[in-house]
Image 1 (spheres, rainbow, N blue to C red):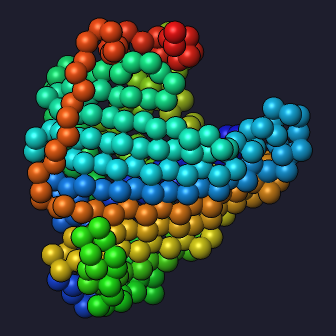
Image 2 (image 1 turned 90 degrees about the horizontal axis):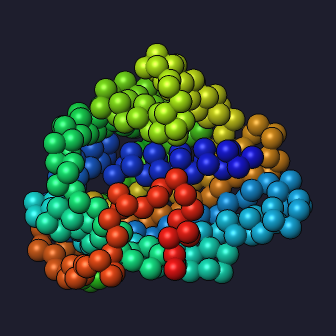
Length: 332
């Protein structure tokens, strides 16, 4: 059952990543605005999400530990404020996640090829030296651009006229006051979502760079059991097949995506909502309901934040962290 919940959550992330002057054709307008918005170098974003997870009757009525898990994950809410500057390779993220009556804050700073993360319950900043990955980053960026184009092509083909509507001259409230927008709404059926997900999977895993990363992760997860490349490729193929088989046992309902587009053709607000239920019978009654809103402001404007002063007393290089052990073992 827990694997089912993990599958549904992974589908959420893929769905969200997929949608990351108006013409009369709302589908073309949306695609053009997605491309233009994706090219923004500097902006501030706010991301709010609310996930209601029904883990199923078996877990709810199981032993005390299972009941606690069910209660903890029944409703997860979060807010993230992100400032980013791709040209200056800088970013600041301040987030809060709450579930089961517990609230946790997290922060991430990135500047001068260095990332410092402040995560709940961990006493020090976790530091990543990005300069070590510059060569891989260049290769990954090129592969990511090619992959994004292929994914966008899939979306273009999915946006038939009966699925897309346009509402002109709508007014929305932003931190800078009311803004007139054109709102485009996309509604997908269960079959639509499954077709898109299946195509996404094929495109992603046919990309050599992504496939190489996936195989490396498989190798690490198996603790280097002397598996050959052929073994690892077969394992990856099996995982892909399993994912597609699991997808058949998920029913999507009420999938709605809206994009509010300003006069400059930027998407300044996006909303996505849907429900997904497990049909396999392994976890009776399990499902998930998702609502997410992202807002973009200060497009093209410089961002400002202070990088924390890091030293050996308040920070730790992530390479020195024993990721195979319990993170809590590093807490004094």
